[in-house]
Amino acid sequence: MPSYSSSRATGELFSAHENPPEHHLVAFSDGGARGNPGPSGYGVVIQDEAGRKVAALSEYLGHQTNNFAEYQGLIAALEYAVANGHKALKVISDSELLVRQIKGVYKVKNAALQDLHGRAKELIAQLAWFSIGHVLRGHNEEADRLANAAMDKGMGRVARAPSPASLPREEFYGIVRDGKVELLDGKLPDGTQVQVRIKK
Image (cartoon, rainbow, N blue to C red; front, side):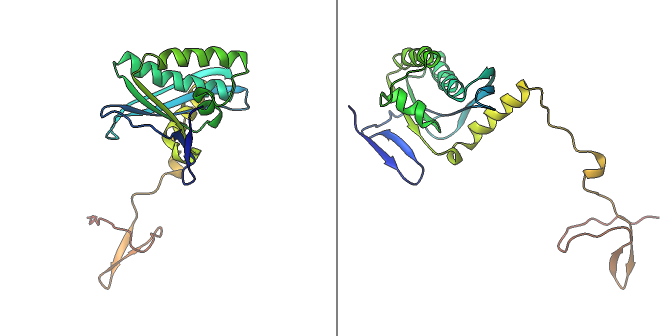
């Protein structure tokens, strides 16, 4: 049984003796289901070893469980790495269950997850180096946003454009008195920068 270390600050759980190679990818993965089971999706943000974003993946998965979506996010990250010829991948997930199942700490009892677990292991075997770790949700915000955007899109939810009444006004009328502009039809907070156009 391999040993593990954790960081209380972030909730990270990684293998205690991992040293990534010089060139590797880092994938922040998240999956979710509204209602669990319910409308589900995943989001994955992939960076290179220097922290530069190289890909953003997301997909609506239909009516599934939270754990199903988490596994699909992991598989998407693995498939991206393999398809693009990368041999080293570090996955960061806020699903402790997923991380511990992939590490072999927990058994996979659910039949649907067993298939996904097997697919993930097949992809991992194609890499020369692999690591997976757990972080708290607050450290995985961009992947979480992608997963939620996928669910919104799949459910037909589109962000509404603000109504004209809710948009901030950009034009006011005023008059100059004692060298100062006094607004006649509204108020602006102190410190607001304005551009004055003289009306003839």
